[in-house]
Amino acid sequence: MTPTELLSLNNVSKTVTTENGDLTILKPVSLVVNRGESVAITGPSGAGKSTLLGLLAGLDSATSGEIVLDHNPLHLMSEDERAQLRQRSVGFIFQSFMLIQSLTALENVMLAAQLADIPNAKGVAEKWINSVGLSHRSTHYPNQLSGGEQQRVAIARAFVTQPAVLFADEPTGNLDHGNGQRVIDLLFELNRAQHTTLVLVTHDLTLASRCQRQFQVVDGNLAEIDGSEANGNVVQIKGNV
Image 1: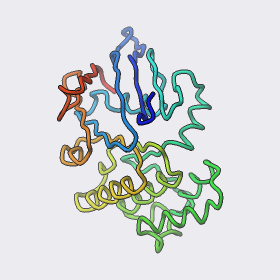
Image 2: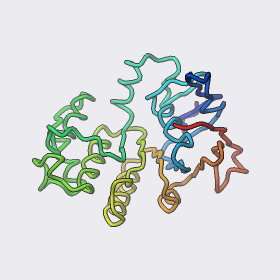
Image 3: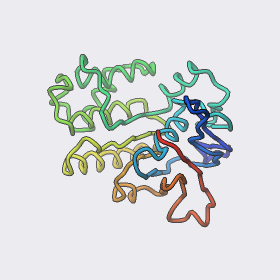
């Protein structure tokens, strides 16, 4: 892995066992994402995007191949070791927000900071709540916040550890157009300011076009577009995820 590379996949595949036998979801793929890049993965539901994202983030184990994240070989690490790596180097933003309902907005962000052993977790969390424009809502619980506000809390939580890479899975899927646009503008603004690598899964081609590189899952294949011929990165994917 070169100094500019943040994420590297080498001949990675994924096969699962079903009642009808083995099902290959991901055929061998090699892929490199550089530090500071923004990468979009698009395609229809069930095409394999979530499986690929789970492997990239170390949430799932590959059947074969090598995955290196920020110089850490995920394929050689235990689940506990991968969890520790995610706490200090990875941020997540999900379609369903995934906030803890019994914690306030500030406490949701604080918890991520505490789990990563960040000093002065409360002060750091307050800074990030303010950065997403929610200091006046910091004591409110998720069910007292709008969808757009909840996703802004999720963005603050994702950035509080200053992760090397941020994985966003359909971050505007539960938002109306106006709130979705504001959330995405904020996400890209903070991403540029923090020089974070961004891997974004989305159905929205307009949103995907804001990323530096795009991949699309179609008919069982994931191919890089807008430069795929030059890079030669083609991933074969099939099956439902």
